[in-house]
Length: 594
Ligand code: WTA
Image (tube, rainbow, N blue to C red; front, side, top):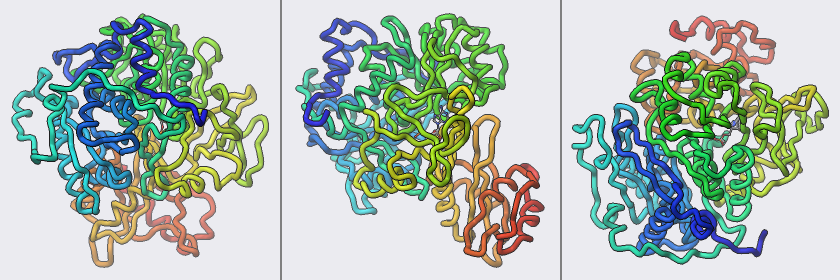
């Protein structure tokens, strides 16, 4: 569609208001605590708020093409901020608010953000998280790196909800005059109208960082018209959304699932959605089910890790609520094991709902392999068939196509509208990462198996990436943090299956000569990973490794480490190792709690 022009925000809001949806709710907002006031925002009101905030951005000098970083909790100002960017052609770069200040700084530096939007804090279960303080640390770091983010706009959120622990909010919100501005003060005198900036079909809409196997995050760039078309179509068809339905996706907007299926896809269809700030476990383990009941949700979209975590509490919490409005249940983020699938199907869907196990990636923009509800006979654990326009192929190590039954690298042989266009400022890495292994194909980095009926089963990452509770990260990224510790000589991180998180981090640490491996080192390292990457990257096991199993050319044999992590003596051939003894020693060194 190159050469054509449009504006995404116009399509999502003005068009729907013009078509009579002005008084329809776009978003219900449900706070962390059930007693927090809940809010509903109609399409008309959303359009006004977006225009006012677009005018705020313009007044702060933001123009088409400028990058705006966003680090926010799940509050209504988050989609408002995104859509305001889209309205004036600014490129938003959202960083999930569970990332550490270091990660935020690295991402703001990479995209040379001009402005940051955040909130004073967020509520998560019993805790208040002080996001503004984290932003201050990040803003200082970017400054040290040699780039200055000029402005920071802050939503005052903590004090407006009914707080579960009021004394928490007494904490001072750090402030820098002439850089920091309160959202509500900026909005006060702004016009609720703003003419949209007409964008070329291929102008950038947003960028979103995803983990790369080298450790440095990749700024995946999505553009305007193709992304809109793909988000709108997949949402409509895969969730079978009909007027009057109430849709709820539990993903944080900081991940691609939130971009496409909390914001762009639903709004493009004039849908009514729920946005939820809290966690599945607060104040009780039935919170998800109570929210479904409260809003009479018809389509529910969540991650296998959440299902597995909630399965543990059995059917009791589910039975307290009426879930009979549900029609379609979605799953995303990692392979769903058949046991979790069946539980979801039986206890949440009461055997009356379609389950859509949607396989896709930050890079693909929207669903690429997924069942269609009511149309695709389901198999528990299989993402089944490609979406319209997507051509999956399985290749073996040599790039030979596997026809019929078999397992191989999952690649795509032709582009589709929602596909990423480049890595921000690094087209070479884009070509290298996705197109060099098998020329002529887009390489997903996942493996898949095709069964006798032609169904595809995603088998997981084939590169050095792992997926902890649906958060994709690379072993290299964690290793580089661990080896920064002055007492650590070397480290190797592998993934180990985990009953709830899907996968978890198992770390092997070789201390420096004459250094001891003790409890203090373990807790230091855990703290470092938490601070540098984020709490979700916390290692489950840190083991002492006097040496690592390396080949004569010095390559670490991760396959052997993965076996040690699960205490499986079937390590296979180790004859190419420089020192075979080390394997036995590592088995002997496994910590008791592992
Ligand atoms: C994994 C999330 C199996 C996969 C939308 C992919 C899945 C990575 C599924 C992308 C699924 C996502 N079945 N695996 N239904 N959905 N994955 O970029 O390994 O955060 O490559 O995008 O998650 O993660 P990302």
